[in-house]
Length: 83
Image (cartoon, rainbow, N blue to C red; front, side):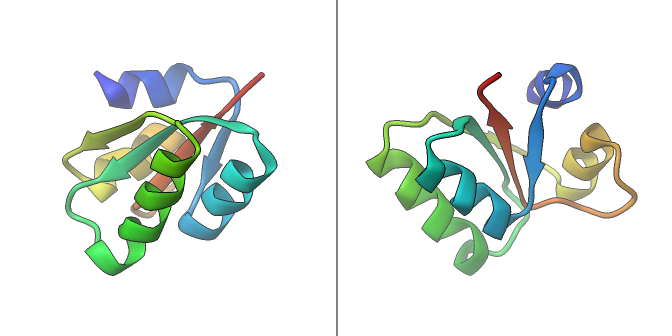
């Protein structure tokens, strides 16, 4: 289901660093995290999202999350940006 949400989103921000920037800038409305990503990579993003009241959704696979974003590699973190 969340993979579909990513596919349908008009603006996605892919990657941990970019997602953090989007959260800090107030542009992220939702964060999608791959459960098979390393915790040391995802934990700071989850904490920042929770501090800012941004919903965090978990999906199973980095590979599938990357595919949903239209990229050839896996994605650990994707932010859906406010339009």
